[in-house]
Image 1: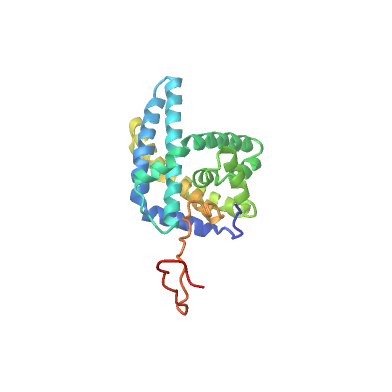
Image 2 (image 1 turned 90 degrees about the horizontal axis):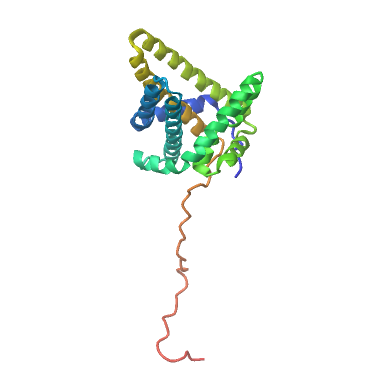
Length: 256
């Protein structure tokens, strides 16, 4: 599978992400409330306890919910870009569910690699953040496995590194601005319990942006081509109208 030679336009990718968000708001937020919202509340409540084990359990629940949701968003974007949105929320989650394990391992490796990269004078972290930008979509759409997803992401991003990096930075800045606004509102009007609820709401609202940008970048870079495509229908042979077929021979061998 080859990467696309088309140049990535950050404005177009971000615009498509927000258009998809707007047009599929109910599906994105509804699924987010069910999966991210419930997991966020569990994590928030467990993190309030003094138990390290319970806090760790809450973090694991949030991680599983996040990767399932990312897989869901990738499948939704694939549907939208195919020109059809005929799958229900349940169908999309069912399609994403087999990749939970792979996505969890990818998320852990991604987090470790990027964190170490940032510790090493920041530049290596930004580099890894860019070349691994579409690992999750590759795993879900192309079923590339854990290590194969990292290789596939680097292959797709190659030649478009600066454009992909710019797109990620713009998306990150948008999310940061919204997060700051929501944090200020939460600090002004909420107590501890209220802050947990507001953090869950912020997560539900903002997670789709990351997932949508990553999924759209994947397809813009040429990922997923030919995957799941229906085989071309075989047309029956058409007789030449100028040729008359002889009627089937009835009885006995044909005469010489």
